[in-house]
Amino acid sequence: MISKKMENMVANSSAIRAMFEEGNRLAKIYGRENVFDFSLGNPNVPAPGAVKKAIMDMLEEEDPVVLHGYTNSNAGYQDVRQAVADSLNERFGTQFHYENITMTVGAAGGLNVILKALLNPGDEVIAFAPYFGEYRSYTNNYDGVLVEISPNTVDFQPKLDEFEAKITAKTKAVIVNTPNNPTGVVYSEETIRKMAAVMEAKQKEFGTDIYLISDEPYRELVYDGAEVPYLTKYYANTVIGYSYSKSLSLPGERIGYLVIPDEAADSENLINAANVATRILGFVNAPTLQQKIVKACLNEKTDISYYDRNRETLYNGLKKLGFECIKPEGAFYLFVKSPVADEKAFCAAAKKYNLLIVPGSSFACPGYVRLAYCVSYDTVVNSLPKFAELAGEYPELQKC
Image (tube, rainbow, N blue to C red):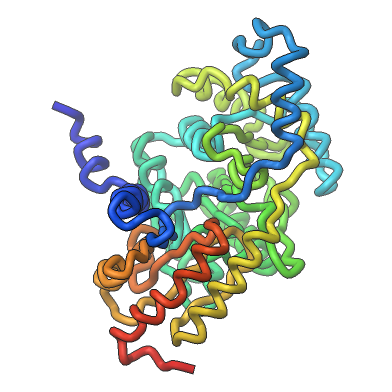
């Protein structure tokens, strides 16, 4: 028999993955070109050419025993970590050094590492709905309790009044994700300043340390000149979790890092704990070849003009059909209001037209659906007539 904890996790397994698998099933029946799968945030833009070149050069020039061996530190290669620190210092005016960087198995691995390092059973972790549903599982992995802040469906900035009211003496961490999955919203500098002020006041009130964990896989994917605040500048007890899955289109390579600043409370012990957590969680160290590639390609970025064209086309097309949605400032998701309260029924109706979309309840925000527009432009264009047919089932949608 599997564990009771896993029984619950299996029963509530990811709706996103289930929809993705359904897309593969339908593609075998109707042809891939006739299935419009907006379920999974899997980048369709290839990695920059410099990534391939770096891989080829390293395989030819590096000592394979060293290249594919364990790193001396569980935190990763020192030269890679220093290069990451130098890049961040240049971009954001920070003063990090290699000890502040722990290379991780993607952002998900990094979140598990930092939560393992921080949480005692019963400690609370706050997340702002809508949020990536795996945050609940990651918190539960270490017997923490996830506390939700209900969604602000006007502009999807965090509800700071509710946030202030729900911080308790048990609050150990707060997770923010900006640009946000699933809304594409960027939290404003004003929001971050107010959030930091609330957390500072609560730390003093309870005599505790509350850590702000910034989950940043979409930092580089922003549009129309939007700027994403770098959170260590606003709150000392900030930990950054980053991934190259989106910025370099390397989701399957599982490479990212944590930043634990010297200014964070108990930083030396926290850094040591993160390194040990990397080992005892079974990661041992982040993939060594990918660490070297990251160092060689720190200044490379995926061409997001492809995503931007999809964003404009899908957003404008759905708005013309009468759908309500906020225009995303970043990431590659569109969060659309369901024309009926039961968004799962709406997703089921969409599937009749081979449109695969994810219910907002997967992100603790029922009544909405998420579309991942990191797909081909042809998929976006060819899906719009199907969305028009779907819209025809709902007279409540006001056509423009």
